[in-house]
Length: 250
Ligand SMILES: N[C@@H](CCC(=O)N[C@@H](CS)C(=O)NCC(=O)O)C(=O)O
Image (cartoon, rainbow, N blue to C red; front, side, top):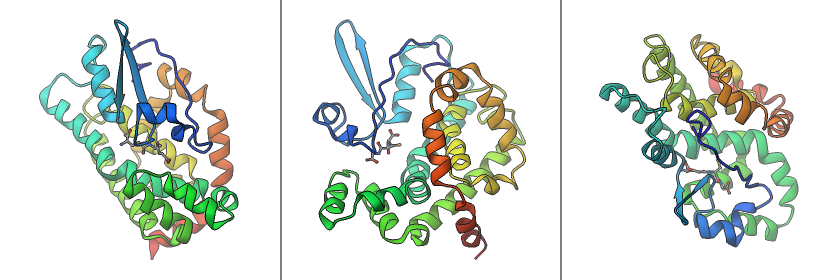
């Protein structure tokens, strides 16, 4: 969103796996210990904004040239409804469930090798839904009901995306918008977690995603900077599809 709007910014990497989000300086910005946080300095005053979709709305309000919310009311409502899907389940619990189960469970189990370490790790998770997902993921992995529900929720998201993309070039009309920005990370995550076969019935999604990833904003701010993250997730999720496919067909 920042790059699309050509707003200069300084990115600070908060490494959740290293517990950067639990440091007092970070908790002072976001007591929920979640990323991201936007700190916007205006006339010496530091405004702290949390929640990804709220951050995007704030940026749109503050930097209204190069608008990313559609101007036409029905398309604007549609863009907001895509964001609402993210906030009402796609991010937590569903993306949390697939990410931790496929991409992070094995290293976490190795790291949390005593009951004390496990208890300390779980105690630091502030959000009750996130905590429940994490407990189930550690205990049951691919067999966790959260994991299965996440697969179903993603399939439903893909159906709705396909239906929209059969009507319009982008998710909230024929112009690229906030709607595409809020949904793209979830397609990226599915591809990273070896779930690309789930997209096979939905012919419009990958071409949409590929157009999006060719944008300069994506190339400079995401593709050029996340090679380590991508490599790590790809390695952790190798072969995940063999565990997922039987769940989808049962
Ligand atoms: N609704 C929040 C959700 C943020 C969230 O869940 N962030 C995750 C990373 S993507 C996080 O910080 N998790 C903390 C943890 O796993 O300890 C938002 O949109 O900003």
